[in-house]
Amino acid sequence: MATYKKRGYKPKTKKEKEVVVEENSTTAEVFNTLDEGASKTEEWFVKNQNYIVGVIAAVAIVVLGYLGYNKFIAEPQEKEAMNEMYQAKTYFEDAANGISSDSLYTMALNGGNGKFGMLDIVEEYSGTPAANLANYYAGMAYLNLKDYQNAITYLSDFSSEDKMLGPIAKGGIGDAFAQLEQLPEALEYYEKAFKANVNDFTTPMYLLKAARVAMDLGENQKALDYLKRIKTEFDSSTEAGQVDVLIGKVEASL
Image (tube, rainbow, N blue to C red; front, side, top):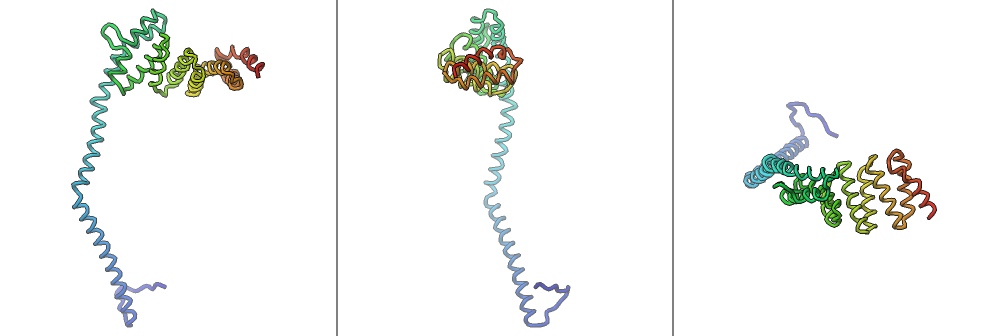
């Protein structure tokens, strides 16, 4: 049991003196150990300070380099790429509105009047958001030009979390596979399309396309599930008006 010793207390017996000596010796040993540890740490730091400073400097250079790259290279490059894309995007939009569509889709891809096309943007500004978006436009242009392999290639290189562009790109790949009569792949991408984002436009559209392909593949239960989902979840959609006849047809075959 520990005892409290008053300030100025002097040991009287031999045993008490031995205890005090032992305590003082232990305390001194602890402080000596701490001093030795501190000295070793200090020696290690002094010995390796050039290395430590070098590591800190390297980290600082990487951080500053990243910030500088974004500000002075990436941002201006992205702005330039978007400016270059403007004319090609205009060609694409005019083509989508039915104005000399085939020739304008071709100009959207290859450029015109001295301006870049989407293929130039993909190549010249690789790795930028503009090049990523150009992959989408190029893929959709090829799809409309019935060049289905290139449509698949460019749409596959496009990635987006956008609730419309993401599903439409995957659905475009599904359309290309369907035209190539690769129905299992078409079904896979239609399913990816309606799962990518749930909304009242793309979801029922790709559910219906998936259901039709599933019927062609003999996957009638899957087709029925997709059709019933349109009927229950998207009853005000254009696609909902088509499902009753298809549901009757699928149920008759089950």
